[in-house]
Length: 145
Image 1: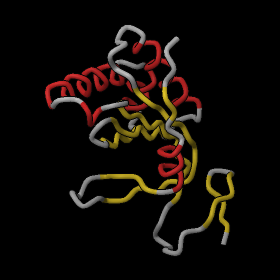
Image 2: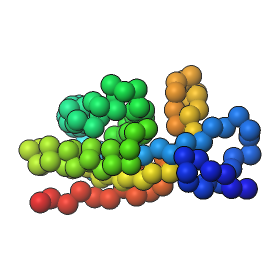
Image 3: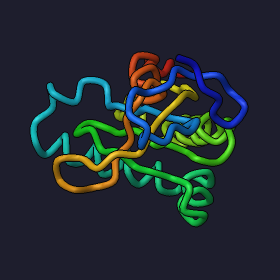
Image 4: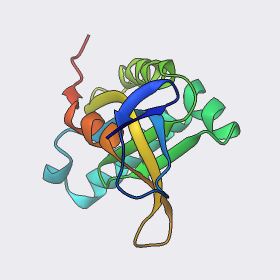
C-alpha cells in the first residue's frame, strides 16, 4: 500500500498510529575509531561533537526544535526536519572545519526519506525508518582536499 507524506509517495506502514514524515538525515562516523585507545576515542569524539555543534545548520535547526540527534558511539545521525538542503550544508560546514583537524577522519552519508518518531528502550525520543537506514548505508569516506 502507498500513501502520501508531504507530497511524496511512500510505502504505508501496517500500524495506523505510525506517523510518517520526510526526514533529512546526515549520518557521520569516525574512520578507524575502534582501533584507537580509549583516550584517543574520547578526544576524537569530543572534537567531532564540538565541530558539529558549531555549524550554523545544527544551531538553526536545534533552535527551531527541528533537529533530532542520535548518537551511535563513534558518531551519530542528525535528522533535520527543516529543508532537504540542511544536512548537505551541515556536511559542507563540517568538511571545512575538518581541514584544520587532519587527524580526525570521518565518513558522512546523506539521505531524505520516510521516518517515524519512536520511543527507544531508554524511553528516549528516537527515529526509525528507511530515511535513517539508507543514510547509514550512504556513508562515504571524506577525501582530503
